Every structure is written in C-alpha cells, then in structure tokens.
Length: 219
Image (cartoon, rainbow, N blue to C red):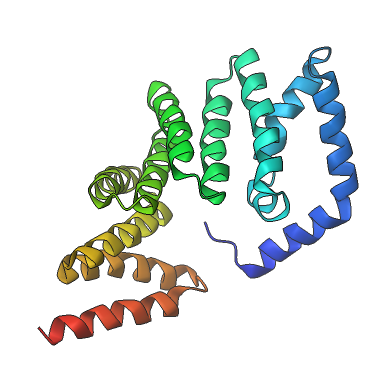
C-alpha cells in the first residue's frame, strides 16, 4: 500500500544517517559469507530491507553487485523465495539502466520460481514488469499479453494496488493502439484506486483520463 511522501522521506533520511554503518555491515557480510551462516543470511536479506530506498540511494550497478551476491547466497541456502525476489530485482536494476532485454532474462527466471512455489503475488508482479520491459522495446503485443496475465492475478488475489498499476499500463498500450474506449475503462480503475488512497499522482492521471474521454467525444 502506498505510504505517501513523508514515509519515503523518513526512510531516506534514516538511510542517510546510517549509510556508513549499512555499508560496513554489507562489506562484513560479503567478506564472511563463506565462513558464517549469519553473514550469508545477511547477504540475502540486505537487498530486501528497504528495497525502495536502495533504489533511490544505490547506483543500479552497485545494487546489481549486491543482488548477484544475494542470488548466490539464496541458492546456497536453498531459499527459492529469496532467490526469485533477488532475480526479479536484478531485472529492475537492469531496466533502470535501460537494458530491457537483460531485464527480461531476469524477470523470466523470477517468474518461473514464483510459479514453482505458488507465489501468486510475485507471479503477478514479474508478469507486470515483463509487460513494462516489452513496452520499452516497443513490442505492444507482448506487453499487452503480460499485462493481461498480471491484471487477472491481481483481481484473483484482491491486490488492488497491482490491479490499478496493471490497468493503467494496459490502458496506455490500448491508447497507443487507438482503442480509446478500452483505454479509458482500464485507466479509470487506476484513477479510482489512486483517489481512494490519496496517491499524489491521482489528479494528474485523472487529467490524462479526461483528455482521452474528450477525444472519444470528438469522434
């Protein structure tokens, strides 16, 4: 659930205060992961702790290094759930670097694990991210295919945030394809959800939806 700007800012401030200690803890864990089970566990859990803050404070290349270590440790510990999360987050890091094809490789690996362990929430998340990556590549057909699957899972498990995100992204693809009526129906789902939780983008997204509805009236 969206926490709002104050929650994000507080997290960033705490990270900045403790940055030296956080880095020192990671360095110790990485050096000792083969000699200490506690260090190995830390290497796997570090990237999960404050994941969104790390996205804002670590360069993607540095985050990739952390995540590659975390994947290796998760495999050593036979923790498939952690392995899948780290692989998916590697996909995110490569997407942030603009390497959509590399991101897709990691999302596919993460998706396979989510399905293997029946983790429907992360299955939906990686399907949605695959849609984003294919959209970046300009492959609308594949993007829509993955968004559709992700949206179906979000509705099945009652994930309103996921439903909103996937509906919006699917709507964008239909808008590009010229199917404005379908785009508007999907984007309305997202705007309704954003308004309900007080998301800061709610009115901006509502304006884009209004623009589409105006274009529909002019047809």
